[in-house]
Length: 53
Image (cartoon, rainbow, N blue to C red; front, top):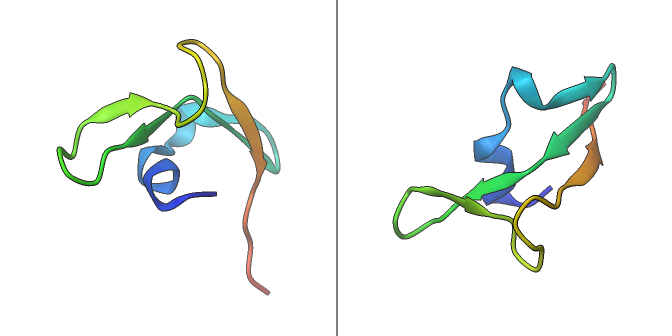
């Protein structure tokens, strides 16, 4: 997961016990939510939950 995507993750993005659905990211310079890089509007990507043991 990219840093901008990680900042945009919230509880609404959880689609399973261990999967986040990422639909947006935070722009580093403007601090605003934007579409994902290299994705069209409305597209998303599923990322596994990151856990440390």
